[in-house]
Length: 434
Image (tube, rainbow, N blue to C red):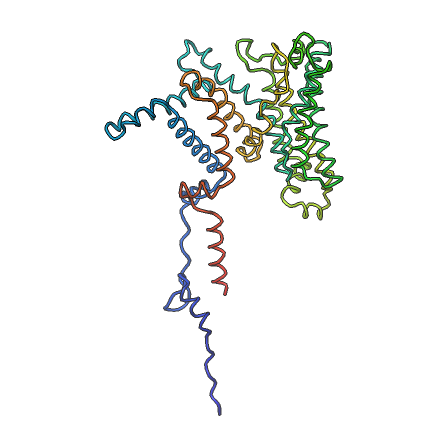
């Protein structure tokens, strides 16, 4: 009779079990680890969220701006010359330069606590909202494209075309008050939407990449508007410079709180645009199709979504929203006309606003207000502290840099990486399953 030999256990399997912290040498597996407290779980989720990373990116950008302000300050440079003898003077100069600059930004962009009365003090935040209005509108347009997988880099061209259309209606057409403003706004929105339609049409019919097309259309719009400003179509006949006539009072946006404050009706319209984008992307079937195309175009096609049609719809809506920024630029003022620089860099700044807002409508709204505060406060900073306003583009660029590199933010602040933790948990489950 032959005795049966015991089954051999593979060495690799034995080593795997021994390496598993859950394996109990006395037999079986150790009981599962107790779940982490809810407070710890909530804290981890908050630290891994996009909101916290955005706040930290802004904080790092402000720190970089502070370093730039301090390093270019003449008092700091003078005190640094005898740092070893009196280091306190250098530290005091650094604090005064940085604190003075950011306090000036607060006074110019949020509330001027040195004003004689409350009405004068709140003019700062109202002025900031005026700067923020076109940034929010253009940022919403860029964000709609981002959520749909379309990279709209043509904000400058859309703003220029929309401004030219709204401006021409504003100074060349005579209509009753109210109606004149509505017609001018609609003309600008149609102009911006048409310029974006060209991009969507070329992408849908020929497969042309929207980044290349939008960049080229920026140059076409710039030189087209420059040509029209040097022709009788847009040029003011009483001026030697290539500038348009002033808009008629019946076409411009009326002030919400009186002529003493710069906030006008355009801000109400941009709030409505934000609500519309929130509903479009989060509550409508068309917005669901946009997001499906942005997440996975192949899966969207299999699900029966017409991609080419969606690309055209996305670009038209994006162009209308971005075009409102151009409308605001010409109808939000009444004293002078506009020239080829009417876009004021809003087209590219809107990309930063959309990124900072994580392409969410209310996030873009908050990011636009933040940038409006920085822009309004930078002029006070330059006037009071002598700091060049070019510090603002540096801060904006650093924000984009850190938003584009979340691992860098996590490394600086030693935040946990959710992807690494998820991969580690999946590997443990795979080992246990074996």
